[in-house]
Amino acid sequence: MLAPDLNILIIDENRIRASIIEGGLREAGHNQVFIITDVKEVGRKVTEIAPDVVMIDLENPNRDMLEHFFSLSRALQKPIAMFVDKSDKASMEKAIEAGVSAYVVDGMKKDRVKPILDMAISRFNAFSKLTRELEEARSELEDRKILDQAKGILMRTRGLDENAAYQLLRKTAMNQNRRMVDIAQSLILAAGLMEP
Image (cartoon, rainbow, N blue to C red):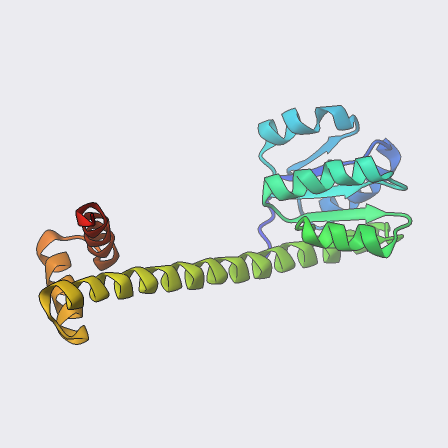
């Protein structure tokens, strides 16, 4: 369910076009709507407003302007809907790579603003969830490599089998109230220092 008190920032150099987005958002029940018409103020205003969602209308942006807003998208890590009048495949692909949640070509109509906002938030949340899951999987894989390396050291230096090495790491972690991977890292570091 969409929270009506979202801070929504509209960036558009054309105040009339910005008012179309603003009107659509206010009709949808969003009252915290801020507009920037001077793109030079974007950095400062983003810091002040701390938007939950950004909607950018660029009409016919040049490559430098697109790259500027793609950089904003990468840094902001919030749902971003970008409206352009014309586009090409390369710009669209760059927008997706930069994390733009909705890239809308020639679609600026007041009654489309709310569904586009909802889609941008949903896609951002889905992408964020996938990113978190990927990071967790990477972290688990890295932890497993560290544990395997530590078990190998114990097996080699103490003559333990794999299960006994695992149980020793586990018991040590419980006794010291630390994570097994931290114990394993300490063991790997110590073993490295002992090598000639």
